Amino acid sequence: MEGVMGVDLRKRRSIQLLWKALFELMTVKKMGFSKITVDHICENAMVHRSTFYKHFDDKFRLLEYGLNQLMERYWEIPLEKRILNPFFWSNHFFEGSESHQLIRAQRNDELFFDSMNSYSMSFLRRDALMFIQNAKPIDIPHDLLAIFHVSTMVALSEWWRNNPDRASLTQMDQYFNQLVNENIFRS
Image (cartoon, rainbow, N blue to C red):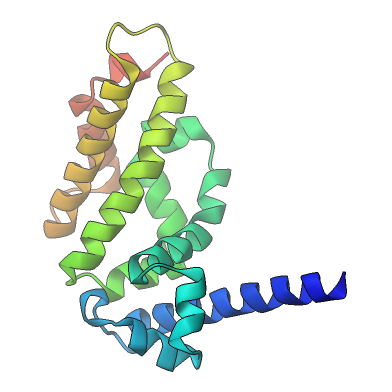
């Protein structure tokens, strides 16, 4: 039994070292995600490339793993709040967090933001579907409505990232609710 637990501990340690190395490269060393290679990550983590590839297919999967780690506490925010006031609650969660530090450090790296948007869309879509299925009956296919919901949120986020001084969090939530038709999402 000790051998199995040791392997599990070594695996977890290796994965944590790799994530910590990537996070440090992106935040402390301020390397753009698009410029970081697996060799950079392994060198910073002081592990061999073969260790990296035992756990991850590429740097994108490592980033996804790390984002999952950073987002664990986000799921403690009630679903209704995450859906109806996404900008306020996202900001409440991110402000001062490691996630916020990462986003600030990578603000000019389009590959990072493309990866972040793709990651975000998957969990936001899951949230939207869960919320829609528990809302009042709607004559629009739920998966279509979830995609619309998430696409609107991503579009607003992109606009806000490029125009940070043009709207407050409250205004962003108002824009969001106007665009997605709050009658659909309000029970």
